Length: 379
Figure (cartoon, one colour):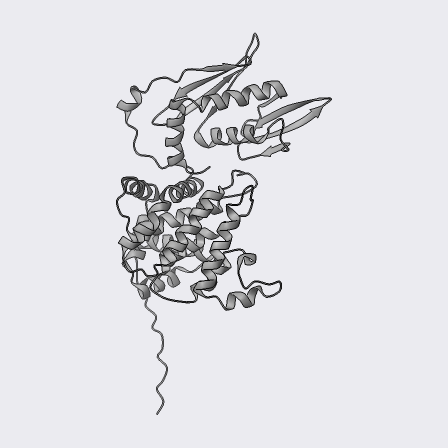
């Protein structure tokens, strides 16, 4: 007599609003990891089947992501160990930071940060308990096919079907090599998906080994996680302001060059704003405030070098271009939120560029800027 196949049982239950929100956060994590949407019932089934405490901890941490990341930062900067769930949350935001890129966010992630993500993945990959498994094919799928040792034209799918740990290691190593080559524009933006899946799905011998493996890459991982948090939440990761400390911060003196003056106004914590005063009897003044806007303004000025090849800038906050009028170049920039436009001669443009360079040589500006970079990430 043959055994009848077991029928799956359907369980119908009422859930609280808190549990429903927990399941919604879990759905968002799965969608970020796989790129596919799942139903609430399917995600509940996955959580029940896995019954993993660390996965439930990840979901709970993401209920207040800014608060969770702030605590992770405190522990990370103090050199305290992070739990597997905390590393997973960090990796989730690293993935978001890597993939937060469009034509309007031209400040791409640096090659050094991409290399750190690949190095962190390899360090964690060596600690996983299992050998070859179905996830190796997924890891390869998020890496450039031409970095695979067995890759040849027309045989990409065949190479992935034969995914092994050794091929994964060699592919990651080759991708890292190309990423850090001088003037390289080689990008592996999906590398964050691998780091997140590794921490979310693989099993490790213990958190001590995990912390030792990831600790060297903490600075780069944090910058990317903060970047991902900003693009998702449009706010920095910062503690409550210390009003006493703010009151005793010395003012930053203005600087001048070529008739232009750059002044500074401090805000809460590390915040500050810039004010450009132009030459002339009825001098206009132009403010630039908030870290993301100032960061792009600096990047725009650096990109439009009078002696360089770049003629146009299109960003989230500014649009700019260089035009050749006769023998002398002119530079124009426009603020995209209000349409205010200025046009400068090459000499005046150089003066403004010089003001910014000198400003960031000031220790007070540099200190505040470094603090803001930790709150907003690599923008």
